[in-house]
Image (cartoon, rainbow, N blue to C red; front, side, top):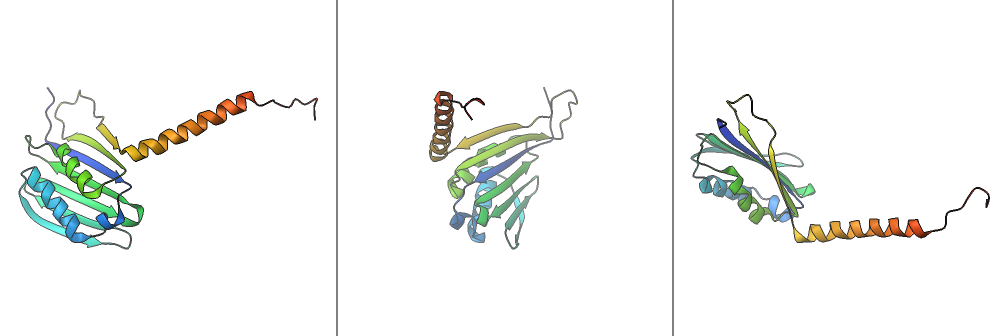
Length: 162
């Protein structure tokens, strides 16, 4: 059994709608919803606007949720950390997926402060891609395959023909 002091999840949301990630009140509501979902006590929140980014940080007794929004890129990075052993920060992905509606969402889960030095420190990664992204990717793969097949049947010029 591997003991750890905390759970940390890093969530990347790609292809978010600008209108959903460019509004402080909505971002604050989303963070509060995540904190409530995990039953975490909220002590304080901080918000800051940079030229190209919005940052919202919620601090709790044994936890924090930090959200970096880059509206012009349609990208949101979320960081959820808790020391509570019964909380499962991975479950907050549902909240962020519903709020930001990303084309693709990727989560990396890390157990922090592992006490067992013999365990592997590799993080676990989950990825979810929308159907539309899969269609685009499949279309690109079909085009590549088509080009390979066509090139295989094209006559090649030898040096003697030139």
